[in-house]
Length: 309
Image 1: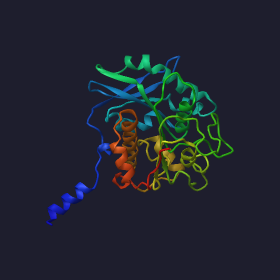
Image 2: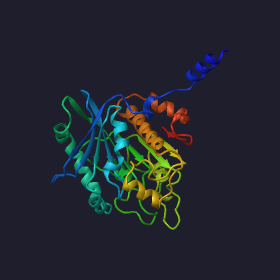
Image 3: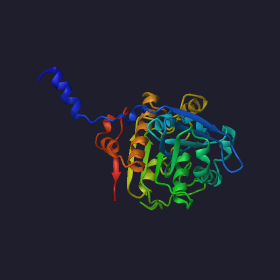
Image 4: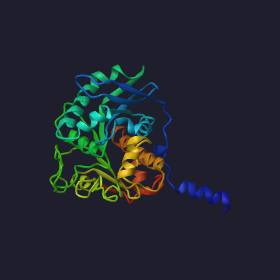
């Protein structure tokens, strides 16, 4: 076999997926001011004519929605309308306790069918029959709580990016969704979770931002099938944020990976796209490929856990 033939054989034997790179669609950031009914919004939408499913993404505590711009643009470029609720950072700090955040994000979901079409580019249609909710850190917990609660709008899938339910098993602010019983969460939709290996580790005198007992592992343990569980063990709790004051704040207080943060953003974006393609569009090939060969991701993933039934 020639060198060329050998390279061709290697290429054809290794599944490739483009979800880890930006998609072909151009996207536009749209900022919608706060109203009496809902939070302010960052919407990232394709500009090309078409009908697209909706992905609502909720920011973490002490982080604004704009800190996830790269991640949301990645997802939107593959044919989704990303909606990120969030007020200015000071207001975001005030929403970290009690059920206030859950209620205000539920209001955003209620606003989508009538409100979202009024702010989208011409010829772009939101398919509000296909909605997934997701979030990072505390926002991940809120996304799970929204899927559990009885909202009038059907949620088709849930995604957690290093989700966290509190500071410890004894310090879990409302809404308290854990019962510490396997497969007990009242979810009847597919779930996907990306956890970080360093998020559960303390840095100097600072406690971990994603401690054991309330982090991604417990979300996996309590979720009902089908569940997809990915672990980026070499990365930390804030490694999917854009550069900026919030990223540097988390870098100061938490452990961060030594690898490229851009690779972590691509990995999270690609896994979200693959999951949404499978569960909102019925196109499961990319998700299956990542599950079978996680080494194709731009970062090292532990073997993917998948519980079907």
